[in-house]
Image 1: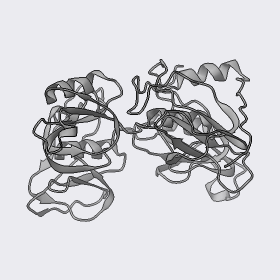
Image 2: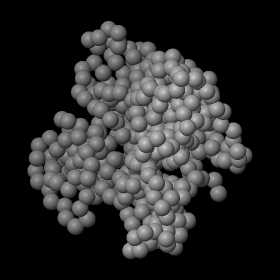
Image 3: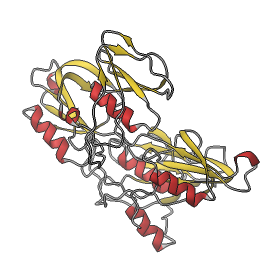
Length: 390
């Protein structure tokens, strides 16, 4: 993606309805500056304009608006370039390149057909509603399936996704799909919207914890009965390994996953093994391992989110840091900020003087995001509509 003569093509909003819809789908995201710079709110999209280089992550998006939201949620993304479906140079389509520079601005911009670039909306004032209402014809979201059913049309498939607590997006094969045995098949798909910590390790002189608002409350009248089995392992049947700060955190992750039937947690390594077997659960005694069952359709116990974990470092995913005198202030700062999901505080006794008294506010992307997006004839894909205004 290079060009010799910079050219800026300002994207005109061709449809006022789409413009209003774009405002509604903006997830209320970072309201403060990144480490490197403060940006003015810039909602402009630059069609056929590339911001070459300075990539920090590559994800998939079905359209440029979704790509912009991913950039906005990413802790350090400041601008992006999206490869549209009409790109013809190679087989890359729907690539969302998240980018950042110390200055907060692209180093260069170049004319390039088939791409659209834009900026993070971190500095913009946005509504909290997250409605991804666009439906994508002849676009597949491959992978991430956890349930299948047959429906009369894609609208019914989308309704099924919306009413299933685990479903975040879907793909529907219509009556003209090439394989006649899966016509009318509705694929319900899952992605993590609960914050998942990418790295956890033991480290002296620090303490880590969560925003007290970071977990998703399920509104049920009855309280959950927690089933935790100490010094017990349930071998095998793993569907995913995540990192968790505690066994209660691990249980929360299992409860959030639509196919997790039980879990095992290794406290020394912070490893949370989500497992699936609807037929059997065979447990064995094992020191250092705790196992348990998820909670379903009840009010979960949430004291785990208020625990401060001494000598535990939640690494990376930093939005920014502030200097503070104690970890309680750090925790309250994270909780009071709607964009902070978890934090790490560095004590004044930490070995590296440059990091002492720093409160690192952290977040990860929690926007529903397909693991891949591809072109495919006679399918329709889209997102759950739970947060949409009717």
